[in-house]
Image (cartoon, rainbow, N blue to C red; front, side):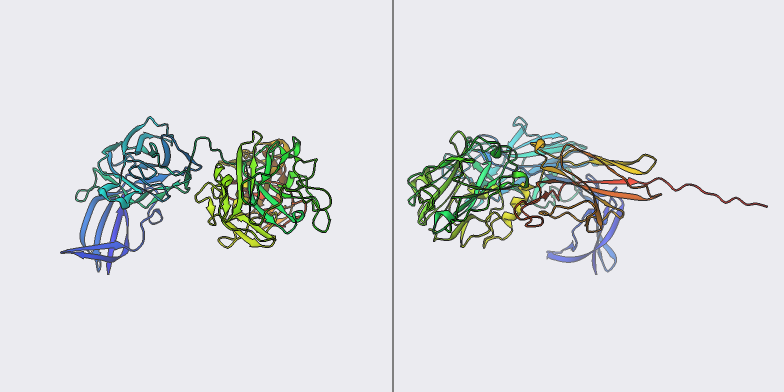
Length: 609
């Protein structure tokens, strides 16, 4: 039986092992299980502690290696958003912690790779030669400002163009003092003139992409490191680019414009759409029709992230029945008419009852819908045409053109729509990669459901609709002679607290077992969610305390969990209509509070003689 005995700081255990290869007269064993902190006491599995190896066959130690390896921490911090076509664009950041017990180390090698579409090349790619650098500093937190010490990471290494997406430097010789962290920043210094806007940077520190000196008596430089990838693809945009605050999620081409609709999605919190415009084009994508302007009224101001706006192109359908209408944004959903003069101005809709005018009358062979801001600047566009027209090509990003025509009674949608940059920032903007069409009215007022994904757009909507809560904290204590519990917590993020759309759901459990509340459901006090009970609902983000009138259990614990939520019950369809409508809970960031009851009174027996 082959085993490797691993000793970390005086604490060890046997790992069953396998032969890896026989290299000359040297036998090589590898542990089947990956080493991790679960196998060792927390006090010994820390950065800087050495690892001793003892190779065993049938219980007999054949070879021992002392201080041949040591533990290090390599921690990545994701960067998100876009990067710009300018100097010093941060694409990957991580720190190295070597601990304080084993002396200084020297970082010799860093090897990174771009999983995105940006490549290095000589006048024909996106990143020029010698345009990737590693900036570094010792410190206690991530903070890149571009004045740190730096060295080049060399691309196209070994003279092989297949490595146009990899960069490496094997002679860095960067000192890491014991007890300090080395913060590393991978930065694109500048781009080539041949850069293609919207290509992406998603850099990773590759597997075994670090090497060190000054440890290991026999085999130096080795570092066993798993790949550390930035979680987000960062598209390159021009400096003038701004993320859209509202996007076109889908539109429906009907046989009659009175049955058509457009679905808008608000992507930034506390958005002001007053004086924004929405317009469409013609079948050749060569001429804009008269658009509509969002009126300067309260309805269009302070819209919360994740609000859905279903816009009927006419107020009546082809049977001359009025479409539904919802003018209250409290539930994060609006349903309006384009020719409603109380909400919009402009547009050429034709005369009642047929409304055959050209505004917002989708063309089957081609069209574009475009949102512009109050300064008439481009915000977002979605269109369709087999060959994109001149006006589509002239638009800035973000934009999408579905490269096919639409039959009557067909829905065009962004697909999969799992993040903002799939709405026309990522390339290609023209084609069928990020759009889809389906016959019929597909999910009007609900997230898109398409062949490539039935859930991605739902998850994106939910992410927008849930309130942010960074670093939630809380505490609790018994009050008033142990007859009630006082809870306190920090507030969640709320860009417009006066509308009271954001609040808190308070759960209590005697066992510490909780189940997340479900999006789309408005709970009531005394409802049960799993084994916990709803004890409080607060409809204001600024109220951050609560009194639970429950007597103290002697020698017991009471457990609480507080979730932030946004929006009210869906007003058109009622409670529990859909997970992306109605109330939305932040199920990933919440506060937990444990309150300890008083000790039982001490009693004694009194004996009478």
